[in-house]
Image 1 (cartoon, rainbow over the protein chains, first blue to last red):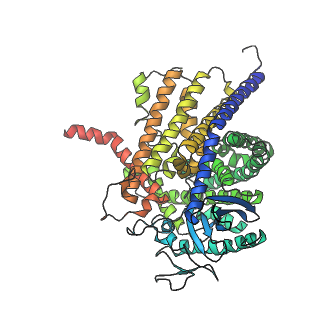
Image 2: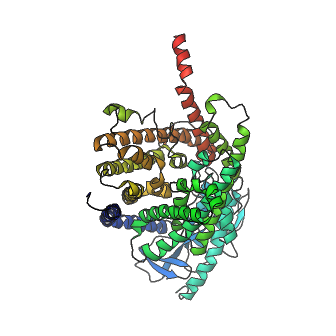
Image 3: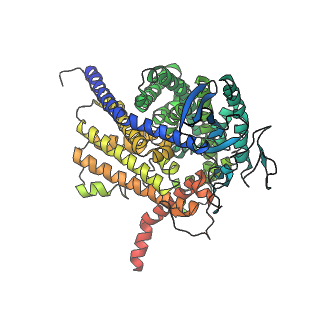
Length: 201
Length: 190
Length: 209
């Protein structure tokens, strides 16, 4: 070692460390990558399963507005519902919501908020409301069967009277409206994409 | 998201220091004087801007095409460390006054989590090139803002009768808590 | 350059006297960011300790081999490698924790505790001593994160490690699990530690007793 010049030794040692590091990581990547991919697929499958009506399988279709997932039953040829991921800004940060639609694109079949950084205890009720013991999922549940035309509307402090209305969360109007705004905007895009694909089949 | 909103969100609403807790070490260490806080803020903003550009290029032109995303952390931190050294050498050669103001803060920046955090968030949120640059600028501006406000308060605090056991880090944390609370008022503006 | 402390003292010092967070104010980013629940604090503490131990092992073994001029570059490559290992491990086997901690796991790379221990200790001491030192620092770090996480979770959600402690009568203090709560709680903990460590106080106590 001591016979080498300092700069050669520096390069030699750093290269050795980097090669070692690359080797360890390449091996570790092979071990963990399939598991990570598996969890990702499972999470996607679970989310689609939550927002679409009972289906046996789904097929992923890439469009200019992102992927759409078409749920199918084995027994019937028509799809049972279309799901897509709505992404946009909420009260404080990004929201990612899996949205399910009927194949004719008139009603929602369900929504599931997958990622959010809303205010704990207020905005987070868009996912689950622990203060409502009887029905903690009352907010997302309202979206099942909701009509989307002309657009989804948030009603403050009152029960909805029309089939396109939902009740907002007290103290978290912005979070409630962020969800509906995201849906209204992106459902329009998905409608366009779905029509381009051959529409309701 | 428009560039303005992105900038505003990174600088104020989701301030790196006060809501993501990135760059807390310099926030506690270099916030005793407003003048040094401004210099540190400028140095960090400058490095953030370069980091945003370089790490974006590395991730999208090298790591993704060669399918070696697993090397993300190793390559980012190496690049940041080398960048900081290069910037330091460059400033020392180019401008003596600038080196005197920024120079001593540059080595501290390598282990500033705000820089690596910036690169990681950019990848995580899938920012396009210009988005990532604007995000870097906004994060730097937000860091500078938080640091300067904190330094202003600490200059005043020197004259205040702080309870004995809260002196130093204790009161800094409490003040930062108050600041974080104030910055939460901006939530909902984006 | 070997340290003169006994092996036991090498471990003990990280727990309180030279505690990385309370005494040296290192690693504040993760300390504040992930402690909105006890479990998150524990997971972050364990991940950091793993990186600390494995980097120390590697660096103390290679300490006479790495040229002084490029040691920092070598250290950060080694640290970043083990951080990637930890990050992928969590993503593969504990996806829920990995999703909660998000980018704060890769940020262990720039946790000053780790680079600090390599520079101050592992690069100058043998493998055994370095491991003990790292273990002490790691356990000290875990303790602070779990205590901070438990206080914030208790006051902010009424539970510890997810088990409800406070009943329905308790209205959770939302601010505790938000960023300001992290700063306030740590500020008060640091003040308490200062009070506990105050030599004049312990002297007074001895006189009284």
